[in-house]
Structure formats: structure tokens, C-alpha cells
Amino acid sequence: MAISPLLVVLSIAAAASAAASQIVARDGHGHHHSNAAPLLVLNETEVTMYHSPTPPSYFTIDWDDPDPQGARHPGLMIAHGLFMMLAFFVALPAGIALRSVKHAWHGVAVLAFYACCALGCASSMLYRKMTPNMYEGAVHGRQGYFILLFAVSLSAIDILNLVRRLVTFFRSSEKFELYSFWHNTILGRDLLPQSTGPEYTGLTAAEPESIDDEFAESKLPPSPTNVQSHHPLRRQSDSEDQGGSQHEQTARWANRVHTHRRDYSVYSAASDRTLFATRSPPSEETLQDDEPHHAIPKIKERLYKRVASVAFATAERALVFAGLAQVLTGIVIYTGGCRENYVNGCLAHLIKGAIFWSYGLVTFARFLGSFSELGWAWNRAPSGHPVSAEFVESLVIFIYGITNTWMERFGANPGDPYTTKQIQHIGIAVMFWFAGLVGMGIESRMVRRWLASSTMAGVKVTTRLREEGAIAEPPSYRASFNPFPALVIGVTGAAMAAHFQTYLFQVQIHQLWGNLLLGFSVLRCLTYFFLWLSPPTSVLPSRPPTEALGSFFLACGGLEFMFSTEELTIAAMRRGRDDVMMFLNVGVAITCLAFCWTLCVVAFKGWLKMRSVKPSVEYA
Image (cartoon, rainbow, N blue to C red):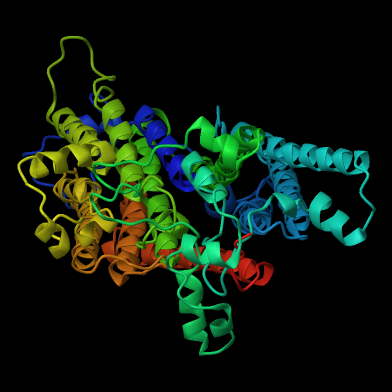
């Protein structure tokens, strides 16, 4: 069962954020009282009572201080940042998209990735040779080399697979043909499931989602008669596809895009989506009649390949998030921030804000149509029963809450009383813990069967009730409408908008990103409301406009979360930049740039799939 690689990465990041949670019991965040009025003017004496003076940094050498010794080399640092961002946010996503269709230029994208990394590393090494060390103990460089080593290991897997295919080809007795050698051996397209469709990506006539589907598909030969009977949604003949408008052809194609769609009746014994009945696998005798002895090994091999493919895709996409982490740590090292007792609040704001930022981009990608094969694009899942997006959201929330609950007291001595701020943060963590658990329970099919059985226990099923459809599953069962992830984010935003801060400007920044998260929650609830009234019936992405707005609020709120660190707000006040509108406009501009990048990546992948697949479904 495929789980989105991007959201698996987010669950790992949530666990990491819990490990780096704020330890604020006795540091700079714990020296103010919530009953005091926020200050309007920066009090430098009060700041130095709890924080050391800000030391010089690479930024001050390059842009602020005079340069009598010739140590100023901002061009090299600009080149380093530019090349590394080209590598991780241009060449790497392009390579992932090219790999998804086994395009011949995938190797070119990989070489471009490593070339940009090499140029970026060279610029960084030259900069460090010509500039004094302004940040003792920085781990940005070591982490970067570890990420590159991880990328090289993934490329090594590609190379080993290529060698394996070459050995298999030369050991075989097949006649050498240049096209088949390039197509199957070099590109490995014989291992790729055939995609279908003229426009939408991710809707593939792919391998069955379960062993049951494998057996079900093996029972009927691929004759036209059996195809018609085995695929109830195929209502048009092949001759009809030759005529009609492009919209009609797309609609006909979409109705045939998957070969096994289910009956949604509660009491249908053949349905996998019933609440009380499940389809049992065929007996061993059936296997002997319908399939040869190699059927089970073949199924195991396909399942193994599927698991390996999902694991590799997860690892490859994790590099994009690793690139974001390197951008954040690079900015911190260059500006000289997050030192001494600033480090805990800095880690909390950057890691947690980055999670909201990343999930906002993922949500926008879902709006564009990503993960539609899993039913995550607010569409009807084409086949199988993949994990819902709401379940993954609830799982991430649960992991964060259950770990972070116990970490708010790490900075306190045994016997110390609980501070107000500790109670606030522990309360939020407990909310994440149990709300995530409730969300996962609602998404569980077993729990849903329990809830339905309690309702149907005293109902006597009659023919009249069956004919009237009174005992059939309501249309709302076609999709998940789980409000608890949105509830958690909305309550978090509302709470942080009321979070006490020392200075009025800090209060305003927290209100800004708190209200943005609250706005996402409201818009997500509106999405559920409208889709509950009209549940999705098509396998194509429905693209609710509330999700486009909600994803923007979520991403921008995460970015403003990162902007609200104590050190950054104090630096803005010192320079006369304590303007909420400026912070908002900068966050909106960066978010729009990131959304444009997301659109380009998703559209590029769709364009590649459209050019590489056939315009009709193959049932053989």
C-alpha cells in the first residue's frame, strides 16, 4: 500500500522537531511574566541581562564592516547559495520527474545536480579559505557532505540496477536490437507500469493494490467480452473513442482509466469497501485451476518491487527537504544567529515553521493533482484502498504530540514547579497527541465497521429497505471528512495569536502567523463542508478553491512562524525594521515564488507523462 513519500518525510521531520523542541523553562523565553504589558521600545539593558551581545558574523564582514584586510568576498557566498539551490530545487526535482517516466534525459539531470553541487562546494571552500571562521562549531558543512553522500548512495543503486540489466541482457539469447536495448535495458522501461490518459498525471493502469486484486484480475482472460464484463464502467465501445469532442474523449477515458472499481453497497459480498463484508482470497484449488504454480512467486516479486520502489522514492524526495534544512542552517550560520541561550527557541521556530511551510507546499501540490492515484487530490480513489491523507496528517500530529509532551521539562530541575509557559506548551502537545489518535481512529476501517455495526444491530433488513437504498452506504462514505487535523492546526494558531511576548512587535508577529494558521483551518473545514454536500465521484482531481487558499495560508503561516524568532525580531527592532506589513509582504512574496516553483514541478511531470504514455487504456 503506497504512502506518499512527501508526507512520510514530514512525519520524520515532525519527530525531529519534537526532539529539538523548545527548552525554555530557564532560558531567555522564561524571564517575563504573562500579566505584564508588552513593551513598545527595545530595552537593550534588559536584553543583555538574559542574552550575550550579538557577535560579528559572516554577514557583518561582507556587508556591514569596513574591509581593511581584504576579507570581504560576498560573491563567493552568493555563488555557493545559487549553485546549491539550483542543484536541490531545480535539477533534483527535474530528475525525479524524469525518472518517473524513465526519460532518456534523467541521466543529464543527475549530472546537472552533481555539477551544481560541485560548483557550490568549491565556492564554499574558497570562501572559507579566504574568510576567518566566524561561527565556531558550525555543522552546516558536515551535514551538507552527509546529504551529498546519501545522494551518491542513491545514484549507486541506479548504477547497480543498470549493471544488473546489462548482465541480464548479455546473458540472454535475444537478438540485439538497438531500440529494445536502449528502451528496456538502458532506460528500464520494461519495469515501469504503463500510464494512461491525455491530460492527468498519476492515473495509471498500474499493478493491483493487493494480492486479492491480483487473483481477481487473473481469473478472466483479456478478451473484449471479458474486459467489458470485468470493467463495469466501460460503457463505450472503441469506435466511440474516435469521435466526439476532446472533452468527451477525456471523460470516456477517465471512466475506463482503472480496471477494478468497486461496488459501494454496505451489504455487497463482493465489495472491499463494505462495512461488514470483506472479500476473501481464493482457495488453493482455485489457484491450481486458474494460475500455474509460479503465480505466488510472481505476486511476491511484484510486491517486493513495489515496496522497494516506494522506499527509493521516499529517500529521493527526502533530499528536497534536506535541501530546505540546509538553506535554513546556512542562513543561520551566515548571519551568526541561534547561539548560546537563543538556540532552543531558534530550533523550535525554524523546525516547526518549516514543517508548516513544507506541508503547505504539499497541500498545494495536492490541489494541483498530485497523489490523485491515492485519492488525496480530493477525488475518488481509482483503485485499491490506500491510506487516506487525513490518516497521514493525524499520524504526524500524533507522533509530534506523544513525543513533545515529555520534552517541555527537559530544562527544569527535579522538583521545580511548572511554569505558565510549560503548561501552555504541554497542553498544546497533549492536544496534538489525542486529537491525532482520534483522527487515526476515525480513518480506521475497523473502527468504522464497529461504529456502523452499533447502528445496524437492531435494524431488520427487508426487501423494501434494500430497494429503497435505506441500508446502502451514504455518498459521503466515498471520501474522508476528518476535521481533527484542521482543528489541531486552527487551535494552535488561535493559541499562538494570544501568546504573550515581551515586545509589542513580537506580539503582532505571533498574531500574524497564528491567524494565518487559523485561516487554513477554516478553509479546510469549508472544503469538507462542500465536498460532504457533493462527494467526489470522479477519479480526476476536483481542485476545490478553498484548498488553494488554505495551502497558501498554511505555507505563509509557517514562514512567518520562522520569522518570529526572538533573535530576528530583536534584530529588526534594532535596525528600525519592526514593521508587520514588511514582514507580511516578504512572507507573501516568498510563498508566491515557492508556489510558482511547485506549479512548474507538477506541470513538468505531467507534461512528461502526457508525452510518454499512450492515449488509451490497455487491458492486456
